Image (cartoon, rainbow, N blue to C red; front, top):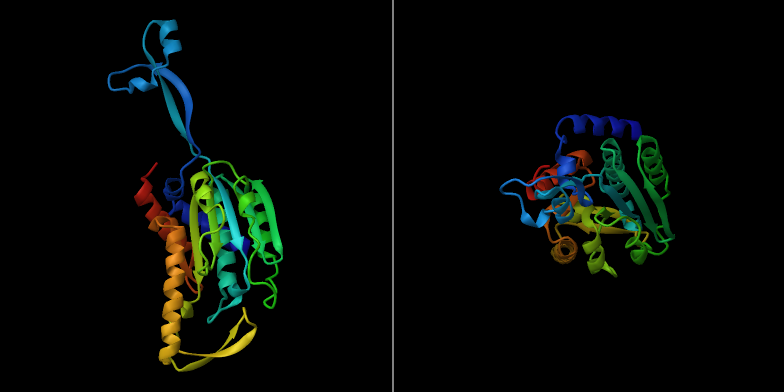
Length: 287
């Protein structure tokens, strides 16, 4: 699976993704490059007074942007991800999306860190770069067994640890189905430290109830079967209320449209990534 995904990523980087990945995520900031002779129009605040005094002519500092990006991925594995009305569950789709993001980062020479959180605890994989190490990280994630559906529903995300898990200005990618639950502890501090991006996975039935009569559905959260009907006015009203609360919470976590993306389980993950990167390129501008 990983080799097939890698081929798709390399092909995309050579075509539609060329330049947009780097434009989507800002690097660590501006770093000093060299001093050059002052020219009309240069910012006087950049004058290097020590060099100017030594050489007798005004010189200014030149800076370049450090473009290496560290991707800090949080994969929140909850029992609810095991739901699927089609060929793939939400979990399978989110695992593919995570792998594509890691491979894309590796192709661009950036570093990848991973925090896998489930009801059983969390595991941190330190920052890695290079195809082999990133492929190993992705393979480890793909090999994780799903959490017990009859156990706790809450993933143990180490929010305090996340604040020191990666360098400042890293891209923090949170992958989840994002139920309505409010902001986590320390979220505002985390947003100041990193560039946060949210990838939400949803099943088509979570967006719109099926219209073709009553369906028997297995709920991985409760471990029970229940009847679902788009023709039931009470079910439609309850579903609409649930959907509005969930969407509201997701927007409050990521208020900027180009910082969040909702992907349906049957949708092509790479196409969705391209769509988000294009949004971010329009917002932040090209390199």
